Image 1 (tube, rainbow, N blue to C red):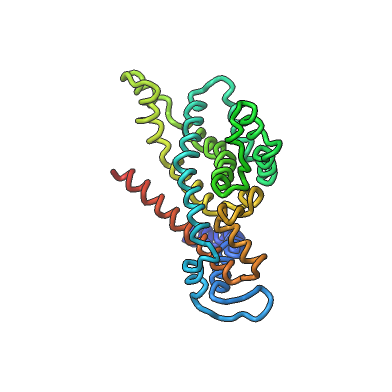
Image 2 (image 1 turned 135 degrees about the horizontal axis):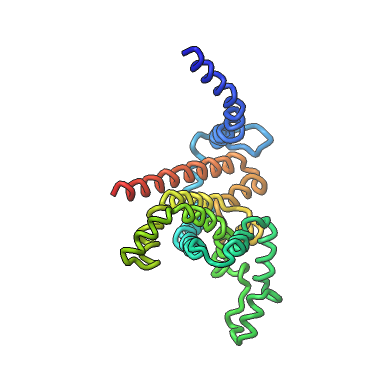
Length: 294
């Protein structure tokens, strides 16, 4: 009994530094943001306590545009789940069959994840450039001059043009997670299904995909929360322009903090993003758990 107690004490002593860092880096800033969200403060002078006024203004004021920014993030989350993840799953299923050169394809598909987001933003800025960008050059070359646009400068096209690189960058990330899960499917399951007369599509539908549901759940959570937190690529490509049509909560938060000197409002947006990410993670967890129960 004494030895068991001693082991528990030793375990706690080893865990304490990690717990301290976890609290200091993750938990404490959440509470600090919650505290500052209750004040009208420019980050330097005296703070004025206003209670929940920042939250009310965030959802009622048209000049802030939080509803539009949140709607853009939710739209990105929709495309991430129903466009990005199916593409990733398709690639993972193809490579998981043991095709020739699969290691090379894995490296190629995963390469965008390794490249700095700022670099990717600059590459896509060159693609979208209205004068010499490859997209407009190709359209003009095949006689579709009317389709050539200022892709990131027009309200009608800017949001879609900003979403495409964001979705493209992380296809390889989700694909690698799914590929690893597919490779862990026992071969005897596949062989038994094949003996029973199932084709490749049926094996994937009834054997492989149900088996990798835990990873699909993780990818869905990552896709949705990543969309809600999206910032760097949008910031590089448009910084919320034109006319705030590509604004997302993170770019709006930066604008509040550093351009409008509204530290309390910026903290409010940060706190709401944290709450939304946790809420969607719990909802997705519940959806997948319900499917498993059925």
